[in-house]
Image 1 (cartoon, rainbow, N blue to C red):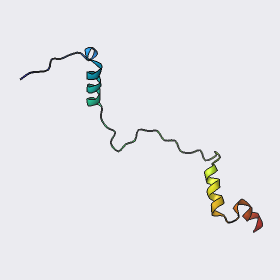
Image 2 (cartoon, helix red, strand yellow; image 1 turned 45 degrees about the vertical axis):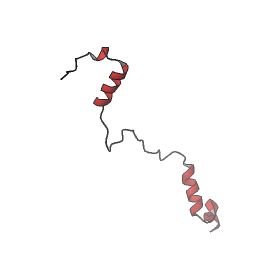
Image 3 (cartoon, rainbow, N blue to C red; image 1 turned 120 degrees about the vertical axis):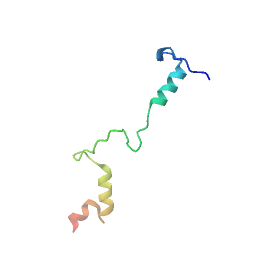
Image 4 (cartoon, rainbow, N blue to C red; image 1 turned 90 degrees about the vertical axis):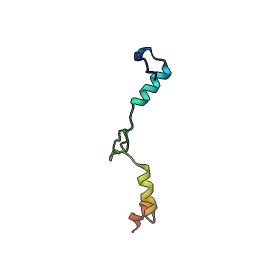
Length: 66
């Protein structure tokens, strides 16, 4: 039975350091670490305007004609 000899982390090869770091590193599971910022309600939203135009029969001018 052969036991592994202790080698300081600084003296390990790049490949061995990477292997050790990957073993220590865990998973986030269901948690997504990306920071999310809500949309600015005051900002101009072109997609919102397009959806409104599709919904109204005459577009924005339909309101004036009715």
